[in-house]
Every structure is written in C-alpha cells, then in structure tokens.
Image 1: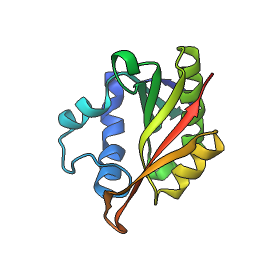
Image 2: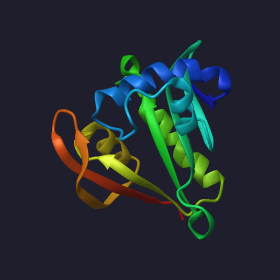
Image 3: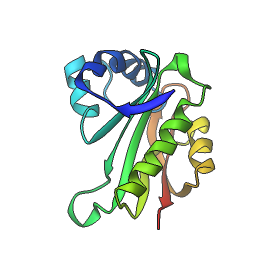
Length: 159
C-alpha cells in the first residue's frame, strides 16, 4: 500500500465509499444524498491523499489548517476508509501520513474537531498515535444506531 496525492481522476473512485460512509450515519455529519459534484466540493480541497494498492483506492484523507489566519498553525484532517478495506491498516497508514505531513509543514499541533465517541475504532487509532481527548461535546452527533452521542475534540501536539 502507498499513500499519494489525490487527483481529480481519483474522485470517481473515492465517491462511492464516501457516500456509503455518509449514508451509514455513524461517523460523519455531511448531508446524505449529495451528488458526486456536491460531495467533491466538500472533500477535494486542501491537501488530499489516497491510499492505494495496485490500482484500487482503499481510503482517502484531507488535511490542512484547522482555522485560517491566527489559527492556521494548528492542523486538522478527515479520513475515510473503504468498508472493504477496513482492518487492513489503511487508517493507520493515512494517520501516520497525516502526522508526518503536518510536522513537515511546520504545524504546531493537530486538532480533530468531531470524532464520534461511538466510533471506537477511530478513537483508539488516534489515541495510539498520541492524540488525547481534550473535550467532548455531549449529544452533538445524531448517530443512526445510537441516537445522540458525543463528539470528541482530539489533539496531538507536534512541538
């Protein structure tokens, strides 16, 4: 598996799992039923990468500053792994890439703004990479299977 920058040609391969993950209603608050073009505008900006094996895209991540201007020294990122590729180290590879990319680009830290507390796999992965839960907004996410659950804010200092 390798991580490389995403190009416009990759979007038709990202969108099917992007829309499947959003439709599942467990991890992302994006509106359901977006067209490919509408979803592309929400995902394909800043620095976007894909995890690939052969010619298959296994997952994608986007990263960049968490806030503009005086908040731009803190980065953020979002990740999606194709359901068929889960449990194969794709999330960890994308997470490792994300941490390295933020370090290489001089960020002071990385803040994840909305990690769904019932997404235990993601929470454990980010904790294994050194992220800490610095707060939880109660009932901030309406999970399809759990109802209203908290959103963790997670942080990793880089300096």
